Length: 283
Length: 204
Figure (cartoon, rainbow over the protein chains, first blue to last red):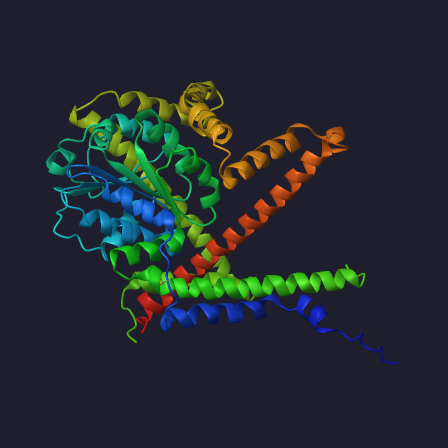
């Protein structure tokens, strides 16, 4: 005698759905707006406007340090913001730009960004320098702060003495005295920058991080240790709008929005299914 | 559509697809991608480590620019004394220096910048702003929850523990939401590599 299968209602079926079936609509919802942007309105986030204003406040002759402290995996999250903020730095007249990295991928990611960024007439060696990667995080920061020419050569192997951009920059104090600013694109170096650079030298510091790390850095921002804090593609899209240069983030913000709406719908349906099952005494 | 001829992009896309094969099931190509990533990361870290030693310590020593690099070079070599049964004790000097310097750097600024400044900021924030009020209540109740455990979570003091649990649940929910945002950003980054860089399909 065949056993009659227990009738499954929609909530039970949904609860038991193969997760691979959920991936398909998610990928479709992401791919479509990447190819055919919907054009959802982009609101400039206040924290991004604050970062933009802090960048503009760096006076002529000042030094901007760009900390490319993320890895290739985080390019999707931080890449667009890094490109936009780097572009902004290059648009500022008579400002020197130093690029440092305390993650191995950092210098390569700067090179990747520079394929898209318009140097606006700034020359390598004269207006900007890529100092490369420094191993050791906090310890490396302490040493670098005392001697910004610690490595002796830049990322490409050129002697720093030959680069006029480094002429007036011997220690981190020189950057602070120029009313400079550090913008770090980071996934974990804030905890080293703040005690080793920001606190001892009173260096103005802004951070762009991923969505996951944003809440963990809010205490630093609330305490005034960070002058600006923003995250991910929201920062990238807002910054592109401020600079009037739509790019990767603008192209991806529609996809992010739709994907998150879809995930929210799935979460709500999943929770309804769970509550229905619980009400019926299921496990 | 113009498929890229850059071998780097091809390798990148291949490994993205190899990794995504895990969504179907664990496959040999996923394992290959995983092991390759681990191997390449280890290789890059080794090269960068050696480059640092070369640039900061060895080259100034050879050119006569600075001789202080000889100290970390010698101490670094002493680390390898661990592999000798007879001279293993020599490696402890370098380990002691590493731990000591690390502790010194940490104590110098961590206590102030990662603890005191934020504590003062939380406690002295003006209570005219709802955010500050919520922040203060959450901080006090969650600290109470973790410091006082057991009997203190019952009765009247238990109200603090209950409030703390609600704040923590809201926090974990927000962190979950942020995690989803981050993961979706990673997915979009990979898809942009495939669609824009590899296939040359630009948004219309």
